[in-house]
Amino acid sequence: MNRRRLLQTFAASLLVPAGFAGAQFVRKPAASQVPSIEALQRDWKKLLAPNAPVAHDLTPIVKTDAEWRRALDAKAYDVLRHEATERPFSSPLNDEHRPGAFVCAGCALPLFTSAMKFDSGTGWPSYFTTIPGVFKTKSDHLMIVERTEYHCAKCGGHHGHVFDDGPAPTGLRYCNNGVALRFIPADV
Image 1 (spheres, rainbow, N blue to C red):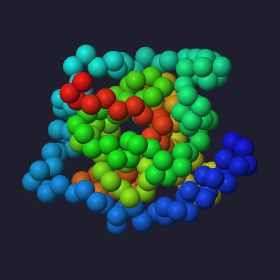
Image 2 (cartoon, rainbow, N blue to C red):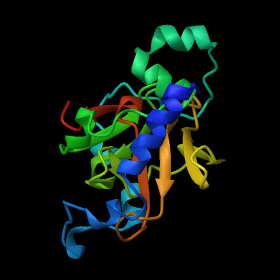
Image 3 (cartoon, rainbow, N blue to C red):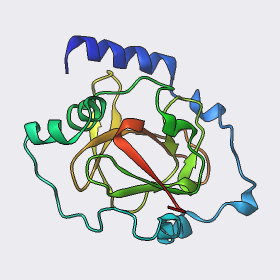
Image 4 (spheres, helix red, strand yellow):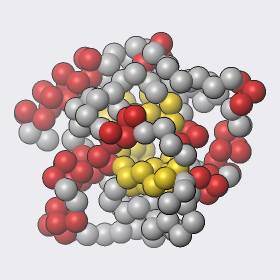
């Protein structure tokens, strides 16, 4: 990671201190309207459009850096392949509230559904749970404090970091770069 990108990432992290997002939830459905985590994870395909062009297994995709550069636009390439961070409030997916699924921009693996999304106030699309088995995690010490970074289990693309300041019932906030995702509406 170059110095400029490191400084941009550091500046962005100062804008969203830990705990800030937890107090900023905008959309909170009534507790009686929220399905259980088990139901959200089990029934995620109900929000996937019929015949949606998505990956159906976790068979790893292996490409050279040059192949990834050709396959992705510049911003998605920087985030997915080189762990960059997009500017907060720059992704149109931050304001996406239609029913549907969010898939990896690198390999089309379904990662989240709209039922897992919440408005964290951080400027990045945020989710309180994931479709099971779609991410691998590792520790990240880039910002001095330890963070948990998550990557797509199929293509290895970097998506973001998970924090423990999310809403109930999980208390988690998967803070995802919007350029690392593609949204497929349920009614396509």
